[in-house]
Image 1 (cartoon, helix red, strand yellow):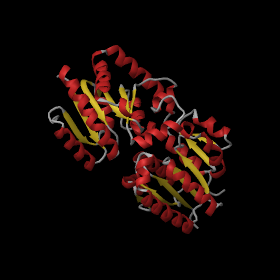
Image 2: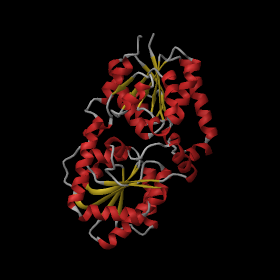
Image 3: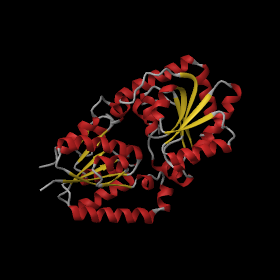
Image 4: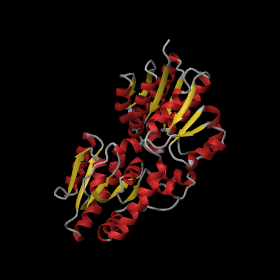
Length: 375
């Protein structure tokens, strides 16, 4: 009888990382049946058994989730019914803690014999350490990406393995040799439609201001999908920046290696930019109710993953009302005219990114998961 694994990812980055892990796992366990929910990459890696829901599921912020509570509740109930019917040996949850931690608790109650492994640990050390004991009771193993996370989860009594960050493999495969363009500025407003709506107009205004003093500066942005790229081109046209800002379909990793500097939305892209040594400033905007609640629960000094990993401020962070065109333009202008400053930030970014671990994260994660099969 074939063994079964159920997997859930709810965001684009989780889909990419999950697909890499699933491909490695399938090579180790060729008879394993893989079901669940993720994105197009995981669907392909599972032979079509993983449903693609990422475009609808990738909602950021408490307020945005509450507005779609009914939709999420329906998906939750559907997946739980599917898991009950399949009775998988393993449930693997990839990031997406708002949904996945609740799902883990429901599966632990309904199917206590199913082993539950969490891949890409939720950042409860930032917003709710009080959940750690409950996670230790619900989960069988945590696979974490950052070295400092291991002790946090182990101290709570949860078996934890540091596998390193899968970005290392994914980004190394895309490393190129093209020289940087000292006049090119990257505008990276995120992969979600709401993020882009909040951040891209501000980035365009910063670019307009910068272009007044530095007419040689050029600007390039990337859409995470053709649909998003089209919307971004509409924003460029509305801002009358058609001749100054180019929007491409994808290609963010190439842009991070070609540009002299950039402005990046908080999230996985900030790690990617750091890995490629792109000096940048970080911007972050969510709905005000989400932000006000986050301020009450988040207990860390920095929100940027690179700054957290470094233990100091390597890149400037502009949050909510501080994420304005003037502040962003000033940082970008300094990057463009101060070679020593730009070089020092690049050096710090590369040194911090080196802490993400060596190649092989997908293999290490797959090996840890495979170890639970047959127990």
